[in-house]
Amino acid sequence: MGDDNEQKESSTAVSSSINRHTAWWAVSIFGAICVAAHFSTLGDEKDAGFAVTRDEKWTGSVMIISMSFGFLACLASTYLTERFVDQWAEGVTSIILLALWAAAMPSIMDPGNFQAVSFDGSILNANLYFFSWASLVAVVWIFGSFVTVNKYLKRGDDSGTPPSMTKWYMLVAASFVVMTSSIRLYKSGFSECNAGDSSTFCHRVKYALSLGTVGVVLGIVEIVLSNMGKLSTYPEACLVFVLFALYVAGIAVITFGGDQNGPGAGVGNLYFSTWIGFVLTMFLYSESWAAVKAKMRGDNVEEAAEAKAEEGEAEEGEASDDKKVEDAPPEAPVDVTSGDA
Image (cartoon, rainbow, N blue to C red; front, top):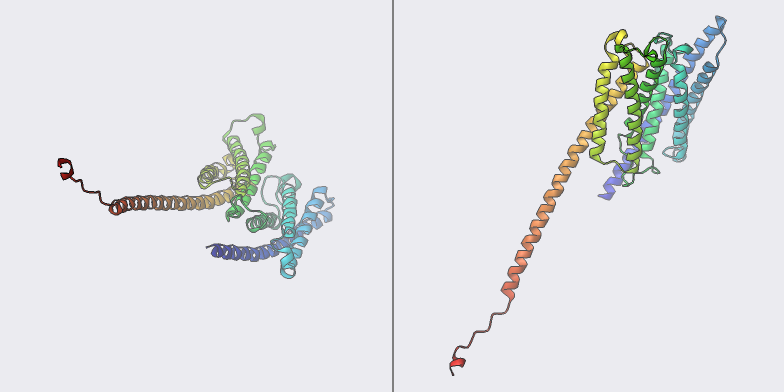
C-alpha cells in the first residue's frame, strides 16, 4: 500500500512538473505580448508629445522581467531539471514574479494611468489588459502547483498539500482583485458612495468590497490551516459552502443590473474577477462535497468493521466459556452409603 502511494505521489509530481514547464513558457510568451503592447503604446504617446510616466516605466520593467524569468525558467527546467524543478530555485522565481505582478497590476489597471483601462473603466489596450491577467494567473498557478507537490511543504499529517490548493491560491488572487476594484470604485469621483449615498449602486459596491475582503481572509485562513494539517474535511466543506454562497449572490449583485446599478456589469476587472471567483468556489465546493461523501462512506465502513470485530470478539468469548465448561473435570460422585454405615 505504501509503495502504491509513493508511486502515485511520484506520478503526480512528474505530471505537475511537466505542466509547470508549459506554464513557464506561457509566462514568457504572455510577458512578451505585454511588452509589445505596452511599448507600442508608449511609442504612440511619445509621437504625440507625451512624456513617459514613472508608472509606465515601472510596469514595463515588470513585463520585461516576467518575460525574461519565464524564458530562463523554461531553459532551467529543460537542462537543469534536478537543480531547478521542484527545488527552491523554482519556488523563489515564482514568488518573485507573483510579487511583481501583484504590485504592477494596480498600476496597469488604474483608469487614471491610461495603460490598459480608460477613465470610464472600458478596455483601452486589449492585449495589455488580457495578457497581463493571463500572466498573473499563470504565475499564481505555477506557485500553487509548486506548493502542492514540493517535498519541503508537507501537512502536519504528512499527507502532502491537497491538490485543490492551487485553486485556493487563485481564489485569493481573484478575491483580492474584487476587493481592490471595489475600493477604487468606492473612492472614485464617478460615484457618490464616499459621500454617504444610499443608492443601489453604492450598496452593491459595498457588497463587492465585503465579498473580496471575506474571500481573501477566509482563503488565507484555509491555506494556512490546511498546510498545517489543522483543517479537517467537515469544517473545510462549511467554509467552502459559505464562500460559494457569497459568490453566487455576488454574481447577481455585482454583474447584473446594468451600469446604473451593477458595479461589475461592464467588462472590466470587477466583472472578470467576480466570475472567476464564482467558478473557483463552484469547483472547490464540488470537490469538498465529494470529500465529505467519501469520508462518510469511510466512517460507515470503519463503524461496520468495528461492530464486526466486536461481534467476533463476543463470539470468541462465548466459545471460550463453552470450551472451559467442556474441559472442566467431572464432579466426584457423592457416596451416600458411607453415612449410613
